Length: 198
Image (tube, rainbow, N blue to C red; front, top):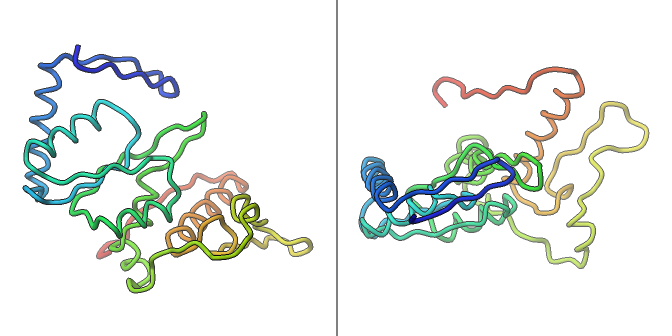
């Protein structure tokens, strides 16, 4: 056996042989090249531990691409920082993962932290990079502020100061989460789509 993968949250327990790993790495190498991957090109992985991650890393090594891995538990602002620092040509992620029995949307976080997406949604690229405020309010920042106010009905606050980290990506995630909560409250399904020409 080359690798054994255990993921209790997903009920996954599997093993791959060296032959299976080689075939998977070969397939990922071809996929990387078809997407514009090349020797010296930068690739970023925002994925939980899995055999696929190992295969992509080996594929990058085979073609000489430079790869970096970002922990799948990092906040949107930290992910945005890594993307800004490395400026990858390709980003690999997955739709979601489970962390402590909680579903976490990885693709959603990548969508709101890439400069191209931010520019498309806000028509503003310069100044999008989030930062951590230099104030001694670590407990408040970790906990976040209340999203409602006493008194007003149907009032919900979304903004960079209402979350642990600030910046456009964090606000975008907050807005998405708020819409999900409103849909849940109204008994409606939350559905997203991409408009034509966007």
